Length: 392
Image (cartoon, rainbow, N blue to C red; front, side):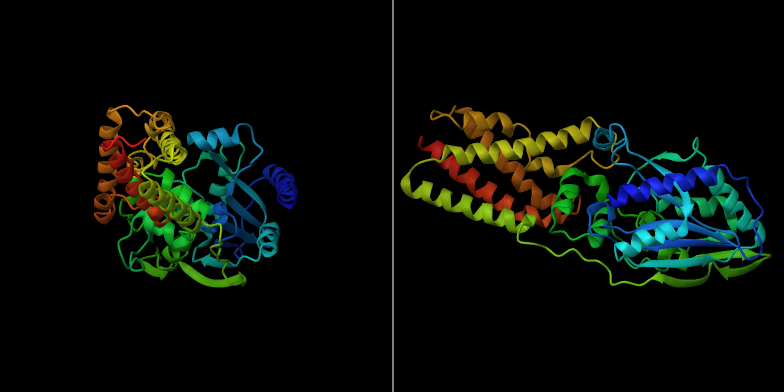
C-alpha cells in the first residue's frame, strides 16, 4: 500500500514537472550519479542507480527504474521478455524517503561538468522524460537503470569522457557477477540460474560490468573528463546521503539447498529400502520424472518462445529434461515398456555431461541443484537395474 501511494504521488509530481518549460540552469546547479544499496526483495537485490539534478529552485531524481505491477499484462509481458520500464522525474526527497523507510544506503557522486554540459544533461533528461520518449524495453543485463547512465554520459560528453578499466580486477561472467550480488541459497537466485542460459556465462567487458549499480559507482569514480585539454576526475565530490548497513538476506531453513537436501535424503532412503525389499516405489519415480519434466518444459518455453536475451542455450535441460513428463506416466505402470531402459541410459548420459559443462565454465549451475543431481543419478541407476532384472 505504501509503495502504491508513493507511485501515485510520483505521478502527480511528474505530471506537474512535465508541463514546465525548459529552464536555464544556474552556475550552482549540480548533476549527480546516485547509487542505492540493495533491498530485501529480489528485484531490489542488486541496488539501484539514478541521476539527480539540483539547482536553486528544484531538486529532481530522473529515475529509469519505474515499473508498475498493476499495468496491463505485466506478468505476461515479463514472462515473454517484453517488460517495459520508464523514466520518471520527481522531487528527489521522495526518492530519499523511500530508501530511508527501507533502511537502504544512498551515495551521491557529483559530476565535474562545465555550465554547458550541465545544461545538456538537463535538456537530454527533460526530453527523455516526455511521455512519448520515457518508455524503454528493459533488459536486466544489457539495458537497465544502471547501463543507461553511462550511455547518457557518453552521449552528452562525447569523446571528452573516458571510462577506465583499472577497477576491474578479474574476468568474470555475467552469472558470476550476478551471483556476487544475491545469495546463491535463496529461491530467487535458484530461479534465475535455472531460467537463464549459457549466454550469461560470457565474460563481461568492463562496460558490461556496469549493469550492476556497484560497478556504475566504481566506473564513474575511475572515469575522467577533459576540459580545454585538461583532464580531471569525472567525480568532483561524493558523499553519503543515507548511511545504513548493507542489507543481506540470510539463508533460512526453507532455502533451496536445505529443502532439496532433505528431499534428496528422503528419496535416497526410499531407494535404499526399495533395493533391500526388491521392489519399486512407482510414486517416487513419477514425482521425480514429472517434476523435472515440468521444469524442462519451462526451460523450453523460455528458450524458444520468449524474447529474453539470456534464456537460450540453457544446459539445465540436461537434468530438467522435458520428455520426463511423458516418461513419468509410463513409470506409474507395473509393466514398464522395454524402451524405458534405453531412455534411462539417455538421461544418465545427460547427467554425466553436467560436470563437464560446469567445470569447463560453459555454463555454471546453481549449487542448490547438487542434491537433485545426486538423487537423480542414484535413482536412475537403481531404476535401470530394477528394470533390467524385471522387478516391478
